[in-house]
Each structure stands twice: as C-alpha cells, then as structure tokens.
Length: 428
Image 1 (tube, rainbow, N blue to C red):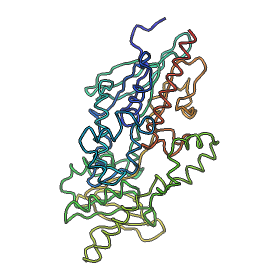
Image 2 (cartoon, rainbow, N blue to C red):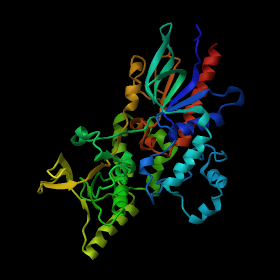
Image 3 (cartoon, rainbow, N blue to C red):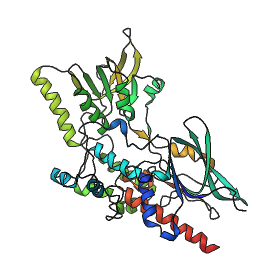
C-alpha cells in the first residue's frame, strides 16, 4: 500500500562539504527526466566549515583542485576556479603562485556553493534518529526524525539516507568531568571559547597535531603578556608526510586498493600511513614554533613552552581560583603542576555519531558491513538504502575523513542510487 506522505528519494543527514558535494553531484549526474528528490538536514543555523578554527594565516593542506567537483567534473560551475572568477579574484589568485588558499577563503567558497543549494537544505534541525518503515515484513523505506531549535520534532521519509555527520570532539577521560566548564574546551570551539575568557593569559594546549600547533601560534601572537604551554606526549613534534608518492594514498583509486584488502591488512596499512594525518604537523608550522622558542632565548623571555613527553594526570581548581594542572612525565621524570586560566583540548575527534542515529536499524544492517559504494549491506528484500560518508576509514582508507575524495565519492554514491532506482523500476 502506498504511503500517504511524501517519500523523498534521499535525505542527507548533515550539510557539510561531503553532503554538499553530493547535492551538487545529484544535480549534475541525474538525467533531466529522472531528477532525484533530495533534501538535507543540518544542525547548524547556517553553513560554516570549522568556524571556530578559522584562524588568521591558516591555509589549506590540500590543493584547491580537490574542491567539491573538479576531480569529477572540471567543467562544473561549482569549481573553486569558477568561484574565484565570479568574485573577480582569479587573476589575483594566480599571482599568489600557490595551490593552497587560506582556510577563510576556502570556507567562503564552500558557503558560496552551499548558498546555491540552499533550497534543498533545512538548517537548524538536529536529526535524532533514523528508523525503519516496514511493509509486508520488509524494510521498505526510512523515517528520519529531527528536532528543531525550539524543541519541536519533525518527521520526514526517504528511500535512501546518507549520513555525513562529521566527528564528535574527543574529550579524554581526565577532562570528562569538566564538560561545561568555560575554562576547559575542545579545539572545535576554540575561538568562541577564548572570546568567553577575555582575561585569560595563561593557556595550556593539549595535543601534538595540526590544530594544537595552529592554536599555539595563534595564542602566542595575541598579546605581549600571554603565556602558552603546548603539552605533548611525544619527544618531538612530528612533521606530516606530504611527499608526492605518499600523497597518492589520497587518490581515489587508492580507495579500491584499501577496500580490496582483508581487515588485518587494512589495519596494518592504516597504521603504516598514520603519519600523513594523525598527531603530525605541517613542516612550516613546526619551523615557526621552533623560531618562536628560539627568539625567546635571544630575548631572554621564555613565556611559551613545548612540554615534551608530558601528559595531564589531573586537573583541579587551586586556592587562587585558577586551574591547577598536574603534569606527569611520560618517561618517569619529575611531575609538575602548572596554573592556567584556560585549557584547550586539541585531542581530535571520534566518529561514532552515526551508530547512535542508526541504532533502530540494527535488525537489518551491520554497521561494519559497508560496500565499496559506501552503502550498508542489508537483506536482499531491503528496498531502503543507507550510505555513510566520513566514517568508513577502516574499510575505505585514510582519505575517507578528508576533503580529497569528496568529488569522486559523491559521484559513486549518486551513481549507486540511480542504479538502484533503475533496478527497482525494472522490477515493476
């Protein structure tokens, strides 16, 4: 029996770069007489890409050619180059002689593209569950429940759902009880966090990756009386390997290579190549940090430090009302206690939100069983499709959480949906 409500071809959960690329691909790939009815639901009130990490002088780590569309369709009007042309900056950008625009500019490019797709996106709604709709014992389509800013709920239905919810901030156990304290916050809310603490002059940055390095450099440049400690477990700051041959692991065809290997081989490969993405820093940023520390020696003013081989053992409020952080030496050296006005956790992300949202579908889908086309495998009589973006690193490789594969992945998912629709149409 036909449903007495609208059933979309697709509902996208989240409207960051991944689902934005998919929205564009659907419009460019689907035949004119067979357009896909799609809508997207985004928790944020409008489009922004890592807004609280849009720091001065930060640049992209991948080429602008790995934008939303170019690797799929260089003639698309959604290319970064066309964005520059539309804004009268193409010649000026060429004169920069770089492949790496500022993060501010790339965010503006993404917003420009999102604005052109705004009719298909519902902002200010948080998806709370994806549920089954069963007909004659088979999973026919999906119910998507979302919560609006005021608390009211809305229900939509779709034949396919694509989850692209990004990562949730990873808060180490030592800091778990400090959630909600304005003085302890994750790097994902860095700018807002610092704006809420205008008198903060002593700051600890916990972490050894790109975000930690960018925050350290931003803080030390803020004002003359700022004091910043970067707390890292490693004995050195490790550079990201972005050499030409290593960068080939982010090529779309490398996804095939990873996916075709068995689980153990994939785990070994991911570990071997982790120095391209995890707990590593661009070499030029390492040089800038080193220069900051060296110039301090020249001037005899050691206000900023990188505390190597240290980890946080505890955190409390001291008698003066500031944060007392107990630091333990990882190699058995003396423990120390430092006082700070704020602690920034540049401790990465966990990508598990999709598991909570898809929990009602457990009888039909194993979340670890993902096809090459990013679709969860289900029973043969299952008409509904569930696709994952940005949470398939274990099966599809390190590029899955990055921008590098946006264009090609969106093409693969759009193609899989169109092929499935043709199969269903042929069956009837």
